Structure formats: structure tokens, C-alpha cells
Image (tube, rainbow, N blue to C red; front, side, top):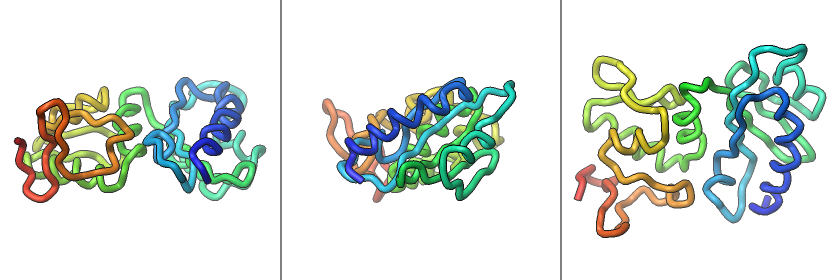
Length: 178
């Protein structure tokens, strides 16, 4: 689907689930501003109290393909919607991972390994060699801990070095900072 159609769909869908969530943000290729997207990704913090929860409620909206505690995948108005539930502590890291791109996530994970760290693919944060969480409260904190320049979502398509105000992002091929 085209980006503007995905944005319009998200803008109609989010108010439906908003009463069941403390926080909702669009992620994935929509957040990156891709011209064409295959689905709509949402990162949410679900409310913990209420008569009905998100997993129950989405079954009233459309065809639910996956309805787990962390990942919910459904079709609404003939559009695929993926909902990633997380905690307030893990929201930023989950948003980073679910925004992608896949190539950028691979680049970040490789960089973490190069410097003796681990970036959780499930969005739990960035951990040192002793498995202590050292970053993840913001997307920027993860880039900073990895000694990388922060990339806005729209700039996360390219995993190779780019010049930005005279500074270079870590290169995929040799991992060096320049």
C-alpha cells in the first residue's frame, strides 16, 4: 500500500485501541517514510487494568492471525497491522528495533558485538558483556553507547557510511568510526 494510505489507516485504527493503551507509536516502514509499505507496525504499552484487554478487543475488529502477549498480527480493513506490546522501560528500544530497517538492525547488532555488547532483538535494550542493561531509555542512547551518530527513522534505510555535518556513521564493511 502507499504511504499515505497506511498513514490514513493508522490514523483511523489508533483511536480504536487508544483507550486500552498508555502509549502508541507508529513504527516500521511507515515511520521510516517509505513510499510503499506492506503493513502497519505499532508499538504499544497496554493498560494493565480494565474490563477488556487489547488481545480480547482486537478480535472484535478484524481477522487476528497472531494474538500473543508481545506480538499481535491482524487484518483490519484489508490492511495488515502488527502490534508490538512492550513496557515503559523497553518502549524506546522496541520502537528502534520495530522501526528497522532490517539492514540497520543488523548493522546495530553487529556493532554491539564488535565492542563486546549485545543489542536485544526483542527490544529489551543494549547490554554490556556482564549482561547489564546500559542503554535503551531512548533510541539516541543506544546509538550513543554504540559510538554511532543517531539516525532519524527516514535515514535508516542505508547501512553504509554517510557524511552528516562532517561526521561519519560507522561503516558496515569494517566497523570503524571515522
